[in-house]
Length: 528
Image (cartoon, rainbow, N blue to C red; front, side, top):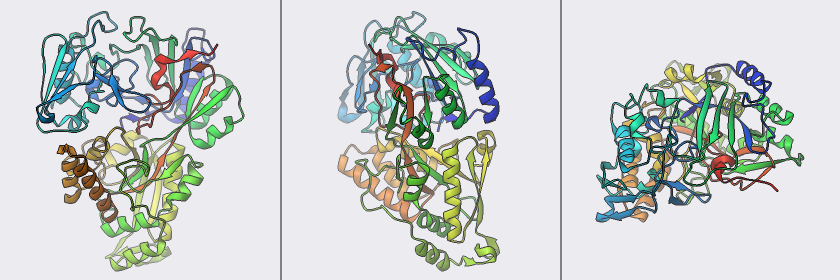
Protein backbone atom coordinates (compact mmCIF):
# COMPACT_ATOMS: atom_id res chain seq x y z
CA UNK A 1 0.00 0.00 0.00
CA UNK A 2 2.75 2.35 -0.88
CA UNK A 3 0.79 4.84 -2.95
CA UNK A 4 -1.31 7.17 -0.85
CA UNK A 5 -3.70 10.01 -1.37
CA UNK A 6 -2.18 13.43 -1.20
CA UNK A 7 -3.34 15.57 1.73
CA UNK A 8 -5.16 18.07 -0.49
CA UNK A 9 -8.88 17.71 -0.78
CA UNK A 10 -10.26 16.40 -4.04
CA UNK A 11 -11.71 19.76 -4.97
CA UNK A 12 -8.40 21.52 -4.43
CA UNK A 13 -6.57 18.91 -6.46
CA UNK A 14 -9.08 19.26 -9.25
CA UNK A 15 -8.62 23.02 -9.26
CA UNK A 16 -4.84 22.74 -9.34
CA UNK A 17 -4.79 20.21 -12.14
CA UNK A 18 -7.44 22.11 -14.03
CA UNK A 19 -5.26 25.23 -13.92
CA UNK A 20 -2.26 23.21 -15.03
CA UNK A 21 -4.22 21.93 -17.99
CA UNK A 22 -4.82 25.47 -19.17
CA UNK A 23 -1.24 26.58 -18.78
CA UNK A 24 0.91 27.92 -21.57
CA UNK A 25 2.50 25.54 -24.09
CA UNK A 26 5.34 23.59 -22.55
CA UNK A 27 3.64 23.56 -19.14
CA UNK A 28 3.26 19.79 -19.21
CA UNK A 29 -0.38 18.80 -18.96
CA UNK A 30 -1.42 20.85 -22.00
CA UNK A 31 0.23 18.44 -24.45
CA UNK A 32 -2.40 15.73 -24.63
CA UNK A 33 -2.94 14.62 -28.19
CA UNK A 34 0.57 15.28 -29.47
CA UNK A 35 2.37 12.56 -31.41
CA UNK A 36 5.32 11.98 -29.10
CA UNK A 37 3.97 12.76 -25.63
CA UNK A 38 1.33 11.31 -23.36
CA UNK A 39 -0.63 12.79 -20.44
CA UNK A 40 -2.10 10.28 -18.00
CA UNK A 41 -4.49 11.01 -15.15
CA UNK A 42 -3.87 9.02 -11.96
CA UNK A 43 -5.50 9.18 -8.53
CA UNK A 44 -2.43 9.41 -6.33
CA UNK A 45 1.29 9.99 -6.26
CA UNK A 46 4.10 8.23 -4.40
CA UNK A 47 5.58 9.72 -1.25
CA UNK A 48 9.03 9.17 -2.69
CA UNK A 49 10.72 8.03 -5.90
CA UNK A 50 13.58 6.37 -4.02
CA UNK A 51 13.77 2.56 -4.23
CA UNK A 52 15.72 2.71 -0.96
CA UNK A 53 12.43 3.62 0.72
CA UNK A 54 10.29 1.15 -1.22
CA UNK A 55 9.45 2.85 -4.51
CA UNK A 56 9.23 0.46 -7.46
CA UNK A 57 10.03 -2.62 -5.41
CA UNK A 58 7.75 -4.77 -7.59
CA UNK A 59 9.25 -3.44 -10.83
CA UNK A 60 7.79 -1.22 -13.56
CA UNK A 61 9.52 1.99 -12.53
CA UNK A 62 10.15 4.27 -15.49
CA UNK A 63 13.24 5.85 -13.87
CA UNK A 64 14.99 2.70 -12.68
CA UNK A 65 15.68 -0.91 -13.64
CA UNK A 66 16.15 -4.00 -11.52
CA UNK A 67 18.47 -6.90 -12.15
CA UNK A 68 15.42 -8.67 -13.56
CA UNK A 69 12.03 -7.54 -14.86
CA UNK A 70 8.66 -9.17 -15.57
CA UNK A 71 7.14 -9.49 -19.02
CA UNK A 72 3.50 -9.35 -20.04
CA UNK A 73 3.03 -12.90 -18.70
CA UNK A 74 4.87 -11.97 -15.45
CA UNK A 75 7.70 -14.35 -16.28
CA UNK A 76 11.09 -13.08 -15.16
CA UNK A 77 13.49 -11.83 -17.82
CA UNK A 78 16.91 -10.17 -17.71
CA UNK A 79 17.13 -6.40 -17.28
CA UNK A 80 20.32 -4.98 -15.75
CA UNK A 81 21.54 -8.56 -15.52
CA UNK A 82 22.42 -10.09 -18.87
CA UNK A 83 20.78 -13.41 -17.93
CA UNK A 84 18.72 -15.06 -15.21
CA UNK A 85 20.81 -15.82 -12.10
CA UNK A 86 23.01 -18.84 -11.65
CA UNK A 87 21.71 -20.67 -8.57
CA UNK A 88 24.10 -22.92 -6.63
CA UNK A 89 24.71 -24.44 -3.19
CA UNK A 90 21.23 -25.89 -2.87
CA UNK A 91 19.50 -22.61 -3.57
CA UNK A 92 21.61 -20.53 -1.17
CA UNK A 93 23.75 -18.63 -3.68
CA UNK A 94 22.47 -16.48 -6.57
CA UNK A 95 25.00 -15.00 -8.97
CA UNK A 96 24.08 -12.25 -11.44
CA UNK A 97 26.27 -10.98 -14.28
CA UNK A 98 25.57 -7.37 -15.25
CA UNK A 99 24.73 -6.22 -18.75
CA UNK A 100 27.61 -4.37 -20.40
CA UNK A 101 27.57 -0.66 -21.20
CA UNK A 102 24.67 0.39 -18.97
CA UNK A 103 24.86 3.97 -17.69
CA UNK A 104 22.87 6.01 -15.24
CA UNK A 105 21.11 9.02 -16.73
CA UNK A 106 23.95 11.29 -15.47
CA UNK A 107 26.39 9.34 -17.66
CA UNK A 108 28.11 7.33 -14.92
CA UNK A 109 28.46 3.57 -15.55
CA UNK A 110 26.48 0.96 -13.63
CA UNK A 111 28.70 -1.39 -11.61
CA UNK A 112 28.19 -4.22 -9.16
CA UNK A 113 28.98 -1.77 -6.33
CA UNK A 114 25.72 0.06 -7.08
CA UNK A 115 23.74 -3.16 -6.72
CA UNK A 116 25.47 -4.01 -3.44
CA UNK A 117 24.89 -0.49 -2.11
CA UNK A 118 21.18 -0.64 -3.01
CA UNK A 119 20.50 -3.90 -1.19
CA UNK A 120 22.71 -3.17 1.80
CA UNK A 121 21.05 0.21 2.32
CA UNK A 122 17.57 -1.29 2.19
CA UNK A 123 18.61 -3.99 4.65
CA UNK A 124 20.05 -1.41 7.06
CA UNK A 125 17.65 -0.96 9.98
CA UNK A 126 18.32 2.79 9.90
CA UNK A 127 16.66 3.05 6.48
CA UNK A 128 12.92 3.70 6.70
CA UNK A 129 11.89 0.94 4.34
CA UNK A 130 8.83 -0.92 5.62
CA UNK A 131 9.34 -3.63 2.98
CA UNK A 132 12.66 -4.75 4.46
CA UNK A 133 11.17 -8.04 5.65
CA UNK A 134 10.73 -9.03 2.00
CA UNK A 135 14.52 -9.45 1.83
CA UNK A 136 14.74 -11.40 5.08
CA UNK A 137 16.39 -14.33 3.31
CA UNK A 138 19.45 -12.28 2.33
CA UNK A 139 22.48 -13.03 4.50
CA UNK A 140 25.04 -11.21 2.39
CA UNK A 141 25.42 -9.43 -0.94
CA UNK A 142 28.85 -8.78 -2.42
CA UNK A 143 30.51 -7.68 -5.63
CA UNK A 144 32.68 -10.08 -7.59
CA UNK A 145 34.55 -7.64 -9.80
CA UNK A 146 32.68 -4.83 -11.56
CA UNK A 147 30.20 -7.05 -13.38
CA UNK A 148 29.09 -9.77 -10.95
CA UNK A 149 26.89 -9.67 -7.86
CA UNK A 150 26.61 -12.61 -5.48
CA UNK A 151 23.74 -13.01 -3.01
CA UNK A 152 24.13 -15.51 -0.18
CA UNK A 153 20.87 -16.52 1.50
CA UNK A 154 20.25 -17.62 5.09
CA UNK A 155 17.85 -20.30 3.89
CA UNK A 156 16.58 -21.54 0.52
CA UNK A 157 13.96 -19.03 -0.59
CA UNK A 158 12.17 -20.32 -3.68
CA UNK A 159 10.92 -16.97 -5.05
CA UNK A 160 14.11 -15.00 -4.40
CA UNK A 161 14.80 -14.20 -8.06
CA UNK A 162 11.47 -12.37 -8.14
CA UNK A 163 12.71 -10.05 -5.41
CA UNK A 164 15.51 -8.84 -7.67
CA UNK A 165 13.19 -6.77 -9.84
CA UNK A 166 13.91 -4.20 -7.13
CA UNK A 167 15.38 -1.03 -8.74
CA UNK A 168 19.10 -0.29 -8.50
CA UNK A 169 20.29 3.19 -7.48
CA UNK A 170 23.65 4.93 -8.07
CA UNK A 171 25.97 4.78 -5.08
CA UNK A 172 27.89 7.87 -6.24
CA UNK A 173 24.76 9.98 -5.69
CA UNK A 174 22.54 8.23 -3.13
CA UNK A 175 25.55 7.12 -1.10
CA UNK A 176 26.37 10.75 -0.32
CA UNK A 177 22.95 11.40 1.24
CA UNK A 178 20.79 10.29 4.13
CA UNK A 179 18.48 7.70 2.49
CA UNK A 180 15.56 8.90 4.60
CA UNK A 181 15.78 12.63 3.98
CA UNK A 182 18.13 13.20 1.03
CA UNK A 183 17.27 15.02 -2.20
CA UNK A 184 17.45 11.70 -4.07
CA UNK A 185 13.95 10.92 -2.78
CA UNK A 186 12.44 13.54 -5.08
CA UNK A 187 15.27 13.97 -7.61
CA UNK A 188 16.14 10.40 -8.57
CA UNK A 189 18.77 9.25 -11.04
CA UNK A 190 18.47 5.79 -12.55
CA UNK A 191 19.19 3.62 -15.57
CA UNK A 192 15.57 3.49 -16.75
CA UNK A 193 13.91 4.62 -19.98
CA UNK A 194 12.74 7.95 -18.53
CA UNK A 195 14.20 10.79 -16.48
CA UNK A 196 12.19 12.86 -14.00
CA UNK A 197 12.32 16.53 -15.05
CA UNK A 198 9.67 18.04 -12.79
CA UNK A 199 7.48 17.23 -9.80
CA UNK A 200 4.82 19.62 -8.53
CA UNK A 201 3.51 17.87 -5.43
CA UNK A 202 -0.18 17.13 -5.62
CA UNK A 203 -0.31 18.28 -9.24
CA UNK A 204 1.90 16.42 -11.71
CA UNK A 205 5.14 14.59 -12.42
CA UNK A 206 6.86 15.09 -15.76
CA UNK A 207 9.31 12.69 -17.36
CA UNK A 208 11.36 12.84 -20.57
CA UNK A 209 12.79 9.95 -22.54
CA UNK A 210 16.33 8.90 -21.65
CA UNK A 211 18.22 9.16 -24.98
CA UNK A 212 20.95 6.87 -23.68
CA UNK A 213 18.67 4.14 -22.39
CA UNK A 214 20.34 0.75 -22.83
CA UNK A 215 17.08 -0.69 -24.20
CA UNK A 216 16.81 1.93 -26.95
CA UNK A 217 15.41 5.46 -26.96
CA UNK A 218 11.62 5.43 -26.33
CA UNK A 219 9.34 6.74 -29.07
CA UNK A 220 7.15 8.52 -26.49
CA UNK A 221 9.40 11.45 -25.65
CA UNK A 222 7.49 13.04 -22.79
CA UNK A 223 5.21 11.64 -20.10
CA UNK A 224 3.11 13.64 -17.66
CA UNK A 225 1.37 11.97 -14.75
CA UNK A 226 -1.40 14.37 -13.69
CA UNK A 227 -2.47 13.79 -10.07
CA UNK A 228 -6.26 14.02 -9.99
CA UNK A 229 -7.77 12.54 -6.86
CA UNK A 230 -11.40 12.80 -7.87
CA UNK A 231 -12.62 10.01 -10.17
CA UNK A 232 -15.27 12.19 -11.82
CA UNK A 233 -12.77 14.95 -12.58
CA UNK A 234 -10.39 12.46 -14.23
CA UNK A 235 -13.22 11.20 -16.42
CA UNK A 236 -14.29 14.73 -17.35
CA UNK A 237 -10.76 15.78 -18.29
CA UNK A 238 -10.28 12.64 -20.36
CA UNK A 239 -13.51 13.35 -22.21
CA UNK A 240 -12.48 16.96 -22.87
CA UNK A 241 -9.14 15.91 -24.38
CA UNK A 242 -7.10 17.26 -21.48
CA UNK A 243 -5.75 13.75 -20.88
CA UNK A 244 -4.63 10.98 -23.20
CA UNK A 245 -5.50 8.31 -20.67
CA UNK A 246 -6.66 7.68 -17.13
CA UNK A 247 -7.36 5.03 -14.55
CA UNK A 248 -11.11 5.00 -13.87
CA UNK A 249 -13.69 3.10 -11.83
CA UNK A 250 -15.63 0.62 -14.02
CA UNK A 251 -18.84 2.66 -14.02
CA UNK A 252 -17.06 5.78 -15.31
CA UNK A 253 -14.99 3.83 -17.83
CA UNK A 254 -18.23 2.41 -19.25
CA UNK A 255 -19.17 5.87 -20.51
CA UNK A 256 -16.33 5.65 -23.06
CA UNK A 257 -17.51 2.33 -24.46
CA UNK A 258 -18.74 3.82 -27.73
CA UNK A 259 -15.91 6.32 -28.14
CA UNK A 260 -14.03 4.96 -31.16
CA UNK A 261 -11.06 7.24 -30.51
CA UNK A 262 -10.42 5.58 -27.16
CA UNK A 263 -9.73 2.06 -25.99
CA UNK A 264 -10.55 0.44 -22.65
CA UNK A 265 -8.16 -1.95 -20.89
CA UNK A 266 -9.50 -4.23 -18.18
CA UNK A 267 -6.58 -5.76 -16.25
CA UNK A 268 -7.01 -8.70 -13.89
CA UNK A 269 -5.23 -8.26 -10.59
CA UNK A 270 -4.20 -9.60 -7.22
CA UNK A 271 -5.61 -6.36 -5.80
CA UNK A 272 -8.26 -6.96 -3.17
CA UNK A 273 -10.47 -4.74 -1.06
CA UNK A 274 -10.74 -5.78 2.54
CA UNK A 275 -11.79 -4.53 5.95
CA UNK A 276 -9.07 -4.62 8.60
CA UNK A 277 -10.42 -5.83 11.95
CA UNK A 278 -8.03 -4.58 14.66
CA UNK A 279 -7.57 -7.01 17.52
CA UNK A 280 -7.17 -4.08 19.94
CA UNK A 281 -10.76 -2.97 19.31
CA UNK A 282 -13.31 -4.36 21.80
CA UNK A 283 -15.72 -5.26 19.00
CA UNK A 284 -13.55 -6.20 16.01
CA UNK A 285 -11.17 -8.04 18.34
CA UNK A 286 -13.91 -10.57 19.10
CA UNK A 287 -13.54 -13.65 16.88
CA UNK A 288 -17.31 -14.24 16.78
CA UNK A 289 -17.85 -10.74 15.39
CA UNK A 290 -15.22 -11.34 12.73
CA UNK A 291 -16.71 -14.71 11.78
CA UNK A 292 -20.21 -13.24 11.62
CA UNK A 293 -19.07 -10.40 9.37
CA UNK A 294 -17.41 -12.90 7.04
CA UNK A 295 -20.69 -14.79 6.76
CA UNK A 296 -22.87 -11.67 6.44
CA UNK A 297 -21.08 -10.02 3.54
CA UNK A 298 -22.50 -10.36 0.02
CA UNK A 299 -19.40 -10.47 -2.17
CA UNK A 300 -21.19 -11.37 -5.40
CA UNK A 301 -23.43 -8.31 -5.20
CA UNK A 302 -20.42 -6.07 -4.55
CA UNK A 303 -18.80 -7.35 -7.75
CA UNK A 304 -21.99 -6.88 -9.74
CA UNK A 305 -23.13 -3.53 -8.38
CA UNK A 306 -19.95 -1.73 -7.29
CA UNK A 307 -17.47 -3.10 -9.82
CA UNK A 308 -19.94 -3.45 -12.67
CA UNK A 309 -18.70 -7.02 -13.06
CA UNK A 310 -15.02 -5.97 -13.36
CA UNK A 311 -13.74 -8.15 -10.57
CA UNK A 312 -14.24 -11.33 -8.58
CA UNK A 313 -15.41 -12.17 -5.06
CA UNK A 314 -12.50 -12.35 -2.60
CA UNK A 315 -12.64 -15.34 -0.28
CA UNK A 316 -9.16 -14.62 0.98
CA UNK A 317 -6.06 -12.70 -0.11
CA UNK A 318 -5.46 -14.79 -3.24
CA UNK A 319 -7.78 -14.57 -6.28
CA UNK A 320 -9.86 -17.62 -7.17
CA UNK A 321 -7.99 -18.25 -10.43
CA UNK A 322 -4.55 -18.14 -8.81
CA UNK A 323 -2.82 -21.56 -8.80
CA UNK A 324 -2.15 -21.12 -5.06
CA UNK A 325 -5.82 -20.55 -4.22
CA UNK A 326 -7.24 -23.10 -1.76
CA UNK A 327 -10.14 -24.75 -3.55
CA UNK A 328 -13.31 -25.18 -1.54
CA UNK A 329 -13.14 -22.03 0.59
CA UNK A 330 -15.60 -20.20 -1.65
CA UNK A 331 -18.66 -19.17 0.38
CA UNK A 332 -21.90 -17.29 -0.18
CA UNK A 333 -23.63 -14.78 2.06
CA UNK A 334 -25.24 -16.65 4.96
CA UNK A 335 -27.06 -14.35 7.37
CA UNK A 336 -28.53 -17.25 9.32
CA UNK A 337 -25.02 -18.52 10.01
CA UNK A 338 -23.91 -15.06 11.11
CA UNK A 339 -26.82 -14.88 13.56
CA UNK A 340 -26.06 -18.34 14.98
CA UNK A 341 -22.41 -17.42 15.55
CA UNK A 342 -23.35 -14.25 17.41
CA UNK A 343 -26.06 -15.99 19.45
CA UNK A 344 -23.64 -18.70 20.61
CA UNK A 345 -21.05 -16.07 21.57
CA UNK A 346 -23.51 -14.13 23.71
CA UNK A 347 -24.11 -11.18 21.41
CA UNK A 348 -27.83 -10.56 22.00
CA UNK A 349 -30.13 -8.37 19.92
CA UNK A 350 -30.77 -5.01 21.60
CA UNK A 351 -31.96 -1.48 20.81
CA UNK A 352 -32.52 -0.80 17.12
CA UNK A 353 -31.69 -4.40 16.26
CA UNK A 354 -28.01 -3.91 17.20
CA UNK A 355 -26.49 -6.65 19.29
CA UNK A 356 -24.70 -6.20 22.59
CA UNK A 357 -22.63 -8.29 24.99
CA UNK A 358 -21.75 -7.41 28.60
CA UNK A 359 -22.83 -3.82 27.99
CA UNK A 360 -20.76 -3.47 24.79
CA UNK A 361 -22.70 -2.62 21.63
CA UNK A 362 -21.65 -4.43 18.44
CA UNK A 363 -20.73 -1.14 16.83
CA UNK A 364 -17.53 0.19 15.24
CA UNK A 365 -16.25 2.80 12.80
CA UNK A 366 -14.96 1.91 9.34
CA UNK A 367 -12.60 4.44 7.75
CA UNK A 368 -12.08 4.74 4.02
CA UNK A 369 -9.86 7.19 2.07
CA UNK A 370 -11.71 10.26 0.89
CA UNK A 371 -12.06 10.67 -2.85
CA UNK A 372 -12.03 6.92 -3.52
CA UNK A 373 -15.54 6.15 -4.77
CA UNK A 374 -14.92 2.41 -5.11
CA UNK A 375 -13.81 2.08 -1.49
CA UNK A 376 -16.66 4.29 -0.33
CA UNK A 377 -19.16 2.03 -2.08
CA UNK A 378 -17.53 -1.06 -0.56
CA UNK A 379 -17.68 0.50 2.90
CA UNK A 380 -21.36 1.41 2.59
CA UNK A 381 -22.31 -2.03 1.23
CA UNK A 382 -20.34 -3.69 4.02
CA UNK A 383 -22.14 -1.58 6.63
CA UNK A 384 -25.49 -2.50 5.11
CA UNK A 385 -24.69 -6.24 5.17
CA UNK A 386 -23.35 -6.05 8.74
CA UNK A 387 -26.51 -4.36 10.00
CA UNK A 388 -28.59 -7.31 8.75
CA UNK A 389 -26.67 -9.45 11.26
CA UNK A 390 -27.09 -6.90 14.05
CA UNK A 391 -23.66 -5.26 13.79
CA UNK A 392 -23.52 -1.48 13.42
CA UNK A 393 -20.76 -0.19 11.14
CA UNK A 394 -20.35 3.55 10.67
CA UNK A 395 -18.51 4.35 7.43
CA UNK A 396 -16.41 7.49 7.65
CA UNK A 397 -14.16 9.13 5.05
CA UNK A 398 -10.78 10.61 5.96
CA UNK A 399 -7.39 11.40 4.48
CA UNK A 400 -4.55 8.94 5.04
CA UNK A 401 -2.97 11.46 7.41
CA UNK A 402 -6.03 11.01 9.62
CA UNK A 403 -6.38 7.27 9.04
CA UNK A 404 -2.81 6.20 9.83
CA UNK A 405 -2.75 7.17 13.54
CA UNK A 406 -6.09 5.41 14.04
CA UNK A 407 -5.29 2.11 12.29
CA UNK A 408 -4.39 0.30 15.53
CA UNK A 409 -7.92 0.52 16.91
CA UNK A 410 -10.13 1.43 13.97
CA UNK A 411 -11.20 -0.68 11.00
CA UNK A 412 -10.07 0.51 7.56
CA UNK A 413 -11.36 -0.27 4.06
CA UNK A 414 -7.92 -1.20 2.75
CA UNK A 415 -6.35 -2.51 -0.44
CA UNK A 416 -3.47 -4.94 -0.84
CA UNK A 417 -2.18 -7.60 -3.21
CA UNK A 418 1.15 -8.58 -4.75
CA UNK A 419 1.85 -10.64 -7.83
CA UNK A 420 4.63 -13.12 -8.46
CA UNK A 421 4.49 -15.45 -5.44
CA UNK A 422 2.15 -15.85 -2.44
CA UNK A 423 4.95 -14.97 -0.02
CA UNK A 424 5.18 -11.51 -1.60
CA UNK A 425 1.80 -10.41 -0.32
CA UNK A 426 0.82 -12.77 2.48
CA UNK A 427 3.80 -12.45 4.82
CA UNK A 428 3.54 -8.68 5.24
CA UNK A 429 -0.24 -8.86 5.45
CA UNK A 430 -0.49 -11.52 8.15
CA UNK A 431 2.69 -12.35 10.06
CA UNK A 432 2.46 -11.41 13.73
CA UNK A 433 6.05 -10.12 13.80
CA UNK A 434 4.97 -7.27 11.50
CA UNK A 435 1.89 -6.24 13.47
CA UNK A 436 1.52 -2.49 13.33
CA UNK A 437 4.61 -2.00 11.16
CA UNK A 438 3.25 0.80 8.99
CA UNK A 439 0.79 -0.69 6.53
CA UNK A 440 2.07 -4.20 7.24
CA UNK A 441 -0.41 -6.32 9.22
CA UNK A 442 -2.63 -3.29 9.83
CA UNK A 443 -5.09 -5.22 11.97
CA UNK A 444 -2.29 -6.67 14.16
CA UNK A 445 -3.44 -10.19 13.36
CA UNK A 446 -1.79 -12.90 15.47
CA UNK A 447 -2.41 -16.56 14.65
CA UNK A 448 0.15 -19.31 15.31
CA UNK A 449 -1.17 -21.58 12.53
CA UNK A 450 -0.88 -18.78 10.00
CA UNK A 451 2.59 -17.78 11.22
CA UNK A 452 3.79 -21.38 10.87
CA UNK A 453 2.37 -21.65 7.34
CA UNK A 454 4.01 -18.38 6.36
CA UNK A 455 7.34 -19.66 7.68
CA UNK A 456 7.04 -22.91 5.73
CA UNK A 457 6.00 -21.09 2.58
CA UNK A 458 8.95 -18.74 2.87
CA UNK A 459 11.66 -21.24 3.82
CA UNK A 460 10.77 -24.34 1.83
CA UNK A 461 12.03 -25.09 -1.67
CA UNK A 462 9.53 -27.93 -2.07
CA UNK A 463 6.54 -26.87 -4.19
CA UNK A 464 4.16 -29.41 -2.64
CA UNK A 465 5.10 -28.38 0.89
CA UNK A 466 4.58 -24.74 0.01
CA UNK A 467 1.19 -25.45 -1.56
CA UNK A 468 0.07 -27.36 1.53
CA UNK A 469 1.23 -24.51 3.77
CA UNK A 470 -0.65 -21.84 1.86
CA UNK A 471 -3.74 -24.06 1.70
CA UNK A 472 -3.70 -24.40 5.50
CA UNK A 473 -3.21 -20.64 5.84
CA UNK A 474 -6.25 -19.80 3.71
CA UNK A 475 -8.44 -22.31 5.53
CA UNK A 476 -7.34 -20.90 8.88
CA UNK A 477 -8.32 -17.42 7.73
CA UNK A 478 -11.86 -18.71 7.22
CA UNK A 479 -11.92 -20.02 10.80
CA UNK A 480 -10.20 -16.98 12.28
CA UNK A 481 -10.61 -14.03 9.92
CA UNK A 482 -8.40 -11.07 10.78
CA UNK A 483 -9.88 -9.26 7.79
CA UNK A 484 -13.16 -9.39 5.93
CA UNK A 485 -12.09 -10.03 2.34
CA UNK A 486 -14.56 -8.47 -0.10
CA UNK A 487 -13.53 -8.34 -3.76
CA UNK A 488 -10.60 -8.68 -6.10
CA UNK A 489 -10.97 -5.69 -8.37
CA UNK A 490 -9.98 -5.37 -12.00
CA UNK A 491 -8.07 -2.21 -12.89
CA UNK A 492 -9.77 -0.32 -15.69
CA UNK A 493 -7.98 2.17 -17.92
CA UNK A 494 -9.15 4.25 -20.87
CA UNK A 495 -6.61 5.61 -23.36
CA UNK A 496 -6.60 7.43 -26.68
CA UNK A 497 -6.10 4.80 -29.38
CA UNK A 498 -2.97 6.38 -30.88
CA UNK A 499 -0.21 3.86 -30.14
CA UNK A 500 0.63 0.22 -30.76
CA UNK A 501 2.26 -2.13 -28.27
CA UNK A 502 -0.05 -1.53 -25.31
CA UNK A 503 -0.67 -4.57 -23.10
CA UNK A 504 -1.59 -5.25 -19.50
CA UNK A 505 -0.18 -7.60 -16.91
CA UNK A 506 -1.92 -9.29 -14.02
CA UNK A 507 -1.39 -6.38 -11.67
CA UNK A 508 -0.62 -5.95 -7.96
CA UNK A 509 -2.49 -3.56 -5.68
CA UNK A 510 -0.27 -0.67 -6.66
CA UNK A 511 -1.54 0.65 -9.97
CA UNK A 512 -2.25 3.75 -11.95
CA UNK A 513 1.15 5.32 -11.44
CA UNK A 514 3.39 2.29 -12.00
CA UNK A 515 1.20 -0.49 -13.34
CA UNK A 516 -1.27 0.00 -16.15
CA UNK A 517 -1.14 -0.24 -19.96
CA UNK A 518 1.86 2.09 -19.64
CA UNK A 519 3.95 -0.47 -17.74
CA UNK A 520 5.91 -0.94 -21.01
CA UNK A 521 5.64 2.67 -22.20
CA UNK A 522 9.17 2.55 -23.58
CA UNK A 523 8.00 -0.08 -26.13
CA UNK A 524 5.02 1.90 -27.48
CA UNK A 525 5.03 2.78 -31.17
CA UNK A 526 2.92 5.54 -32.81
CA UNK A 527 0.16 4.14 -35.00
CA UNK A 528 0.86 4.62 -38.71
